[in-house]
Length: 364
Image 1 (tube, one colour):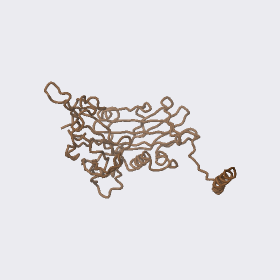
Image 2 (image 1 turned 180 degrees about the vertical axis):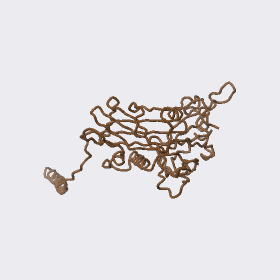
Image 3 (image 1 turned 120 degrees about the horizontal axis):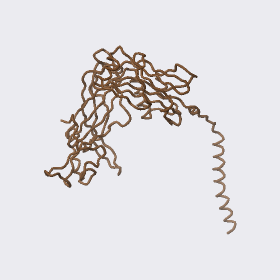
Image 4 (image 1 turned 45 degrees about the vertical axis):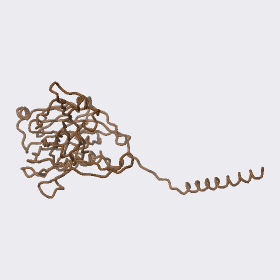
């Protein structure tokens, strides 16, 4: 019996020994691979600035921060910089770091004169260490005239949580717009999408007149990632069916859904910059890619010891497009509280984030 146990022990040990030897041999054949990670030993100054003009308002915003490229950590420098806005290379006022300054168009023109296409804005940033940075000159190009929004319902086959194949509807939010303004400038456009939908409570609560209360709920559609349309990539002067966003065909369309698109008309260089920012936010690339602010930065240093700077300054003409989406747009979906009367908001619509009894002035 003892001999049998010893024999079993020997035959058990031999495969283990062979496996260990094989692993050692394989490891010894591997070459050492050196991976050079981005240098994060020094932080860099980041300057982001914008001048926006809508039909009613001017808006100025400049943000100065420091970042380390690998950690992607940002530290505000609110007390360490002096920010100056310049018009035709003449200082007109200072800004607080990261805080927007807003004027009516009439007020701004009374203070600083009428701004035409021949006028240009730029910015200057001075640090406590005596470094001075300045942007390139940027004019505000006029928005194109016209534009409209359309909805397209699409159906897809998808697997649910139980691995069953189901049909699910989505709504593509599309825009039709010129890409050339009346001055002949071929533009790029940055789109921000938001929506307001009507929500009517269920049967659990009614007002004194026997009808359910109605709220209007505001929601952000495209999050923090703006959609960019590059006019330089459009063959004609008008583009039709440019997809801005896609959303689920949900009960929000039951009582009406008002889509709002904010259109920022910028020059081609700014469009390329923001398109790279969008790709970066969607993680189309690797940690070894250069940040967009370093690729297309238009901030340069004028005084002080040499220092690396990232960021971008641009101008934009801002206007708004709106379109009401009806229940039919969503494929005649069920009303919000019909399928589930106990769902959030069905007894008190003010429980929904972004909800209000106040009807938007543009709602028809």
